[in-house]
Length: 265
Image (cartoon, rainbow, N blue to C red; front, top):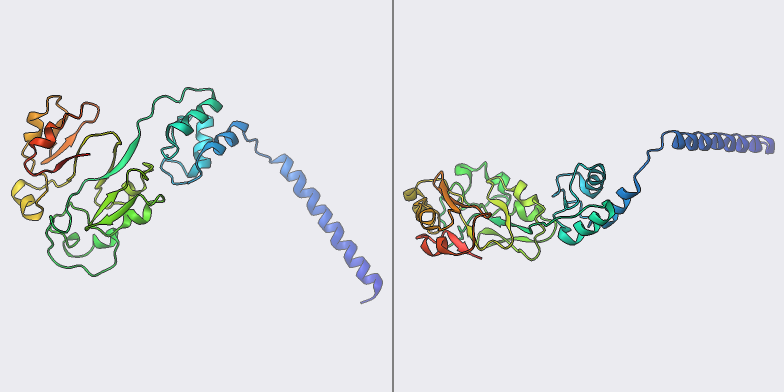
């Protein structure tokens, strides 16, 4: 190739590059999306875990929703009150009181207390175990399968399988709700962190069936409900539940439960 040919090709590439640059610059100005400065400020205060516990697609989604008024300033369960206060200052709003929550596993069926119909040797995954005969090896059809799907879902190393069941480390738990959504048996729920009494069972079977499956299962006898002075305990579908807005932590239900299915925290 001649020198003039090389120069011509170089100039051609340069001109094309310049035209593309001008076009992209003009397009960037024309289609520029204005971002509220507050959105960037709010995003800067969020923890950046992108766990989805707020109900939005990551921290950027929550930041945009807060600025638009679609989400409260205390919408981040991971950041809690400190982050809510900072975001409230940015938005010029009161953060309000937030109730610290934690995940809680409604099952006490450890290897010692719960019976098994057979020994399971397959993949340790609760969703897969649901498809094996009987919906899992445990005799109780409502109990924790111990496959660890919740453990894998937790981004904070706050839940582990101990003695055959999932157990939450409340010091690490951020109440993001990932484990709640992951559990195929819906055994995990978010409860107030300062709650004193909790029902550690989810079985809806009748008493005789429960007692054959687990020595610590709730038999739906109603003794807890009849003795609660505040009316905070009710029994529905053979399982006790506690209304934490009414519960005063007197521990009467814990003391009266014949199966010790209600525990003291």
